[in-house]
Image (cartoon, rainbow, N blue to C red; front, side, top):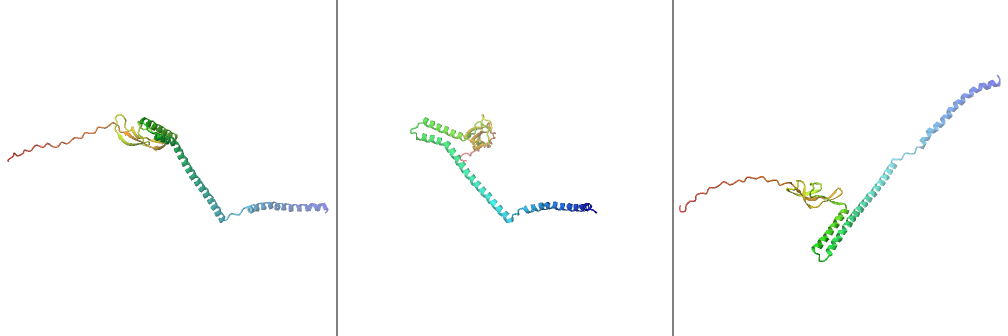
Length: 214
């Protein structure tokens, strides 16, 4: 047998060895990939750590809520003070006119009336600036949401349930009622009272008086 035939016989024996080595090399990276995720997982926190984190979070929330509560209380006080200042500023001119009227010496009735009219005008202006509106009453249908009936009176001219007169004016700001109007409501025409028959006492016949001396 020559050298070429020996070489041909040995080649088929070398090929299976190469094929068997390839699967071993191919499985090696897969094993590394399977082992790597397990190695990268962070350790789980202990119950003590979880409890500490929850307590810190609770303290932060409580501190934020306390700051919010204090800020709201401070803003509420400031808003009330601004509202007071706004009301006082609108009524200061009324007080000024009243003081001027009281300081005028020797006023007659006409001058005093003119001063009172100026004060009333300033009151109306102040109420208008504050958004206060008068509730219409006389001649209006009685509304229990806006009116407070002090009494009812019969009337031949005013229908029943309509306001005849007003005792105190009512006011509102927007849709909010400040004070209801004190009014007198008509009960309609006066109804005649039924006649009650009067019972007359029976007639008593005069008794005969005994004559003197009998």
